[in-house]
Length: 233
Image (cartoon, rainbow, N blue to C red; front, top):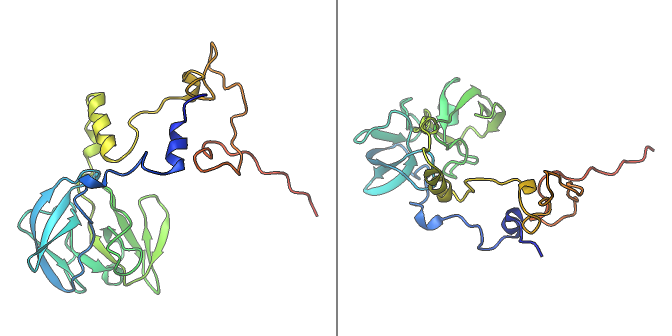
């Protein structure tokens, strides 16, 4: 019997592949305050995140927020309705002019932010009406409720990908904090005991490489089998 494949173990579920949540600092989202100024106490690194995190104090309580470019310790962050268009301030989409760059956008009003949270990313306001249309980093257009809040500016830490890892160990530790594999090995490069595609004196799959559409989650990966031809009526 061959070993169970990595994607099969991941798809099966359970405690084999889990997020290292014990190292996370906590929820990073918009604070639940209205028309208040907070003071940036510190800008820190959060494990598992590509961008830095700002510790902002509101009424004596510390809130973790995604740091925007230009944020500095000691500056103020406004969360409310009628605020200045300064990087880091949190305002509703309805009050932002067209062309404004935003990040950490709420999917529903009050959920704390779900979209555009990675370092160096930002979306721009395209049009406003019954819905606010944003141009996402992927190039697609998405509509939001005008009451949804968003942080102004671009997420900080956008140049981290320009720095090389330098050695394999640094990449292993970086990917481990995000619960991702730091390397991938082709199935045809393995031995037959490790993978169905392994073995042979040359790279050759040796069997159909498509996967049935009724396969279980861990086995339903790669190229799916084509659909049956439908009869013309």
